Image (cartoon, rainbow, N blue to C red):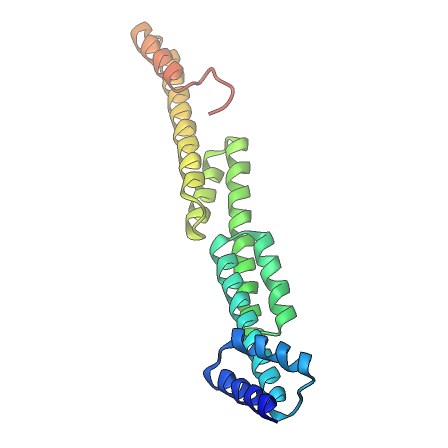
Amino acid sequence: EGPDAELRRQLSSAVDRGRTDAIQALLLKAQQEGLQGPEVRRARDALLSAEAVDSNKRTSELIETAIESDDYWKLQAAMQAVIGSGLGPEQASRLKQAMRTHKTRSDASRELRRAAQARDAARLRTAIEGALKVHIKEEDVKRARDGLRALQAREQARNELSRAMQAEDMALLKSAVQTAERAGLGDRAP
């Protein structure tokens, strides 16, 4: 009973030290030799427990990565991993909140684009305020602000042209036409 006793001792030692690589190798050896008993069961339980901890750790990392990415599909994949791993309602709740935030940001971004396409300064100003509240990408806000400035410049040029035509002053009209051209008043879009 010498070799079996040595293998049992090695299994117990590997379990006590938490060495999953050694446990795996020793369990394989125990299986090949037909060894059974409390040490083998304890080693299998320790290995399963370590694998569960490792799986939960990977799932937690997946959750963090998905939340930071603000990517709908990554959030969906993380939710499936949470459901599959049984991590619990706390993690699922965090992901649901991240999904709601993502939807809010997507809606705000969509409204920015629609307001800019409609060339409606008041709507665009409101959309920019909404976008800032939900922290959408700075580049999207900058693009919308640039569009708003262009719309405002066009409106100002339009008003200046109107005043110059009413005043019937050629110098004022010439200046208004130049301002309108700089503002792109003759162009199709801001």
